[in-house]
Length: 105
Image (tube, rainbow, N blue to C red; front, side, top):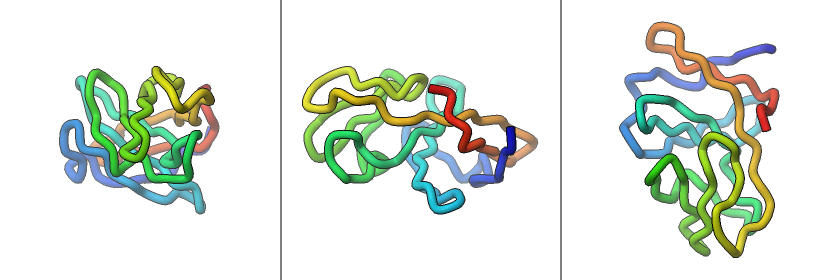
């Protein structure tokens, strides 16, 4: 599984999504509850950026229609979204946040 550097850990703020592009794929990075998560940055219901939404209880909310997605699984927890979004493996090496675009789920 190939990992690429997404950003520095010091660039992330707790519960504040950060959008990055990795090999042309939009990814939202979120540091919350002591972990860093990487989730596809485009809502499965509407073509909008999830990184513009809010984070709470290990979920990211789409700002447009209010659907929330679990940062661990990508599964939506409420309508109008019914399809999950991809999540990606993350590892931390020093201050580097590394992400693999191979999907976990």
